[in-house]
Length: 275
Ligand SMILES: *[C@@H]1O[C@H](CO)[C@@H](O)[C@H](O)[C@H]1NC(C)=O
Ligand SMILES: *[C@@H]1O[C@H](CO)[C@@H](O)[C@H](O)[C@H]1NC(C)=O
Image (cartoon, rainbow, N blue to C red; front, side, top):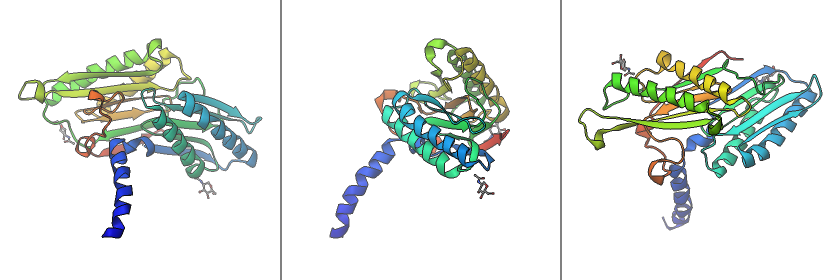
């Protein structure tokens, strides 16, 4: 027993740290690699783009890079969600680089999506072009509870159309967050449900394109997410998400604790239109 206590002392703070920070920040939601079979020159361009993106995106939350001469040119983009603390941004971008360098080695087109960041490169110049091809849908397997489902759906729809409109405003710099409250069955403040909505875009597209992109993502919700406790539609240029727990910073009440796993629940993943 005595010999295990120093170990416990070490492990305990680590566990606390892990509990206090949503681990989702460093677990990829999805990785997609295509155009396998790159030349050595293209691989060198990929390596150069990744090496250039990581430090710059970690420092500034957004970076693009280009490397190599045609036909070995590679274009890249890395971005963190604007609300995320700086250290989480850096961890996320580093994890994204590792993920693409290992899982997508040999691919001339690769993208990886996390809660807190995304990283993408391609041999085609995608920069500035709104891309709603590749589509990743994550929906909570459970319906909302403690609310009238029709009222929940109406409130979610109204919230997310507001989020899409806000995402289109230049002053938002591609990130819109908003909330709405709806009364529960019993009435009173304690039974109110809050819906948290977020839309964000890669910064290479214009504010107007961002608004359209988020609106297109939101328009998928009725097809996949009606009544669901939470849902997100992720494109390569933007995403839209709502949950019934706080998931963006600053977390309500200043607490940065991870939501309880019961609320997070399980997600079904649907992928449409692979590149
Ligand atoms: C790319 O192709 C090579 C050779 O066919 C294969 O070994 C490798 O697993 C492929 N990589 C990916 C990411 O599909
Ligand atoms: C969600 O609620 C709808 C409407 O009551 C119902 O048809 C559907 O089966 C429910 N889905 C889940 C996953 O509980």
